[in-house]
Length: 458
Image (tube, rainbow, N blue to C red; front, side, top):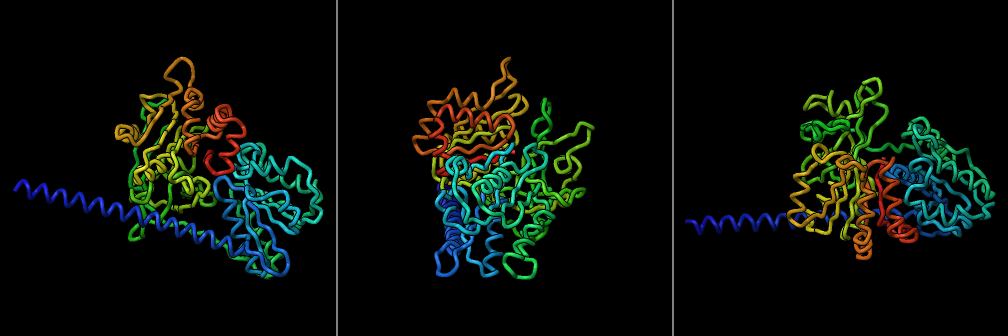
């Protein structure tokens, strides 16, 4: 009887393994299909044809907004019968611009006026030099955030540089703050005129859907910092769980501010069955809570309806780095995006994962400690906890990087990729400086050019 029970257990275990392998194969097949479709779509635009020279639609994107608008722009021109090529600035050489007569640039700004990561090489190799472009007619759509001092800084710099090279403006630069609908409508109107369609082009993105807030857990009671909450959301009713990839984002509309969506990194993968978020509760100087964070962490009751949509974040997905060793660096709620990557990689049996995570105090701010330590115990994760206020001298993740410089170089020489998620102010710049010291300017630039250094910072 005992033997039969053991055999039965072994059979169940074997079936579970088979089902898991089938699931992994299906996910891998779906990702390969998505990449083939994306390549096919790009090829359809970029193939050389007889007739008038194609328009260039070029983008520089940190979180994916500029890339999405670039594809919508290319589709709009294509619908009007205008041959079009779409490229990232990372793919453009000086000679490409010199052989282009019409170009539309859709570019975002990183931090205080810097180019996005996928445009740093273009800015250094092309924009730091003079280049005769009298044949070029262009316009720029600059994406940014008015809360930053150098609003749309890279878009403005690109526009000024193009003008200084003799390029002629098709219509004045359009600056967009936080996906402002009125500014984007100006861009669409201009495209309508260029394409000669006579009607406004409909390029609506997927609509928001109703989800339910089904779980909320305070992650740092007693912390010296603002409260942080683990949030779980699932579709309402019979609505199917949509697909997403590690690195993707959600956009959420708070009831009191339906015009402006807030974005959060997804901290889970589809096999978890729910969207997980890690949200810090913001509080203003007058004591009032942040609009979206206050709604999610305090004001919305459990099972409240949440208007949400998932947005692909191609620049922070695993993509071609899926099988590489991975160094994940972050602080605070940036752990959300890194956790999703760890879940995805561990589910695929990938064990070369190194997390360097920083917060204030070990006693209160070690988010997901049980889960992370369990992965460490199972030799699926190397983790360095860095708590800035547990010793007299402040210590941050960039300090841990410098202390581990030799190991960082060893991982990079073995093909590792680096993903950074968390605070733009302080952490991101500090990590970048530390990596420059460890790998050298040329070494870090190579990682950027090959997509092995990616950042999702805010």
